[in-house]
Length: 217
Ligand code: BG6
Ligand code: MG
Picture 1 (cartoon, rainbow, N blue to C red):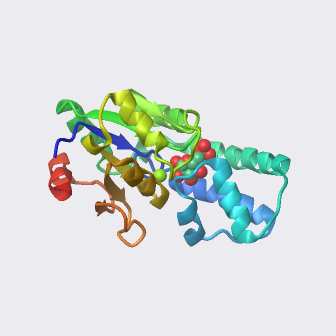
Picture 2: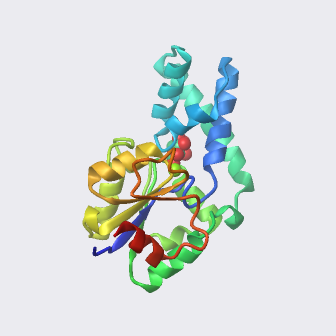
């Protein structure tokens, strides 16, 4: 195995913002008169804002015009951005800072592969923007995860092949994207929620890069 790069999802992998997306969608759901549960949210993780809304409306059997959907996406993003007011480096998830330092010292390339259009803002708020050589976010892709575009663009930007790169993901859709692109995969979460990952960690606290390489071998 010759790993040359790591490509990280953002929300729920680098930073503890997945919960704010969830709460923002809960706000939208309650304004539409239904409960948005944790199980429903698992299905939305990793996908774009408009795809998330469409999926949510389908789950609740609610029809909206394109214009109404546009408005709901704007409101959701306002809720989400309001919650970002409290974000700083304390929201970085366990083990991430250490792992990024190790990767840098070992000349392993680092990219971001996120569906979020707020990715750069979040990276700036937590002070990690400069750690990423390539940032591919929701503004730079035409197809949402589970399409591999976001990770393929990241690998191309870094000049590495997918099978030389590890994708770190907390969502099933993101893992599907990584696998269909031919990447190695690390899941962050539970094996129950992320059965497709080659290896799953609850978080990366105390997990070294060598631990990860050994687990992928
Ligand atoms: C992903 C999140 O990272 O970004 C999703 O897992 C979110 O929950 C998606 O919907 C899009 O984010 P944004 O910030 O563009 O609405
Ligand atoms: Mg995520």
